Amino acid sequence: MTKLTVKDIFDLKGKRQLTEVYVSTPEEASACEAAGIDLIITSERSDVKAIRAAAPHTFFTIGLAYGDHATADEAIRGGFKALNNGADAVYAGVSLVSTEKMANEGIPVVGHVGFIPYKNTWFGGFKAVGKTADSALKVYQRTLAYQEAGAIGVEMEIVPHQIASEISKRVKIMVLSMGSGTGCDGQYLFATDILGTNTGH
Image 1 (cartoon, rainbow, N blue to C red):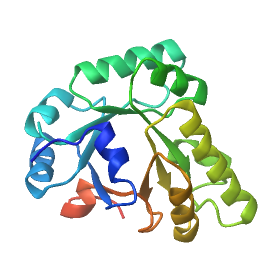
Image 2 (cartoon, helix red, strand yellow; image 1 turned 90 degrees about the horizontal axis):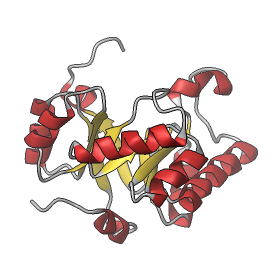
Image 3 (cartoon, one colour; image 1 turned 30 degrees about the horizontal axis):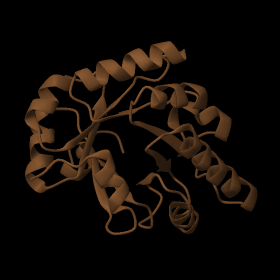
Image 4 (cartoon, rainbow, N blue to C red; image 1 turned 120 degrees about the horizontal axis):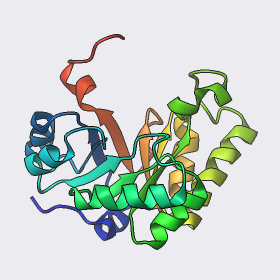
């Protein structure tokens, strides 16, 4: 299995759908690699070195903990730390200014559009985004803004599948569906959900 590169991901847009799984342990990462999952992602608060070692041939994104990188300089440092720990890209819930500055340093950045859990108060709680023309346009504009800032992709969460599909077709960056239907460039799932080891709902 050959590990994907950022160029490969861009080249695959519109050709086949990617798979991404959030992992919390090296065992989950190893299972993903054995199953041929394209991309794995975890939090910087996980044992990232062990997860990287368990899946050395899988494109690996490390998510920067929300709120721990308040300035562009902090985000850049966090991004470089992630890359030094084996990441191929960084998920960052930071501003577009910080995203652009990270991208300018050559850090592959993935943003987040649609519903954003840690900003749920702005959406009136946990609910779908993009159900009206105005809301859908805002999701599209935000996705374009990430593209213009130099991000390599976005996670698109709980956006109606028709909207998510149309946005995916109209941008150059990777759009990963988090409950946004099958028309995006990739599907993002959690290992706990796939394996049935989740608690709660």
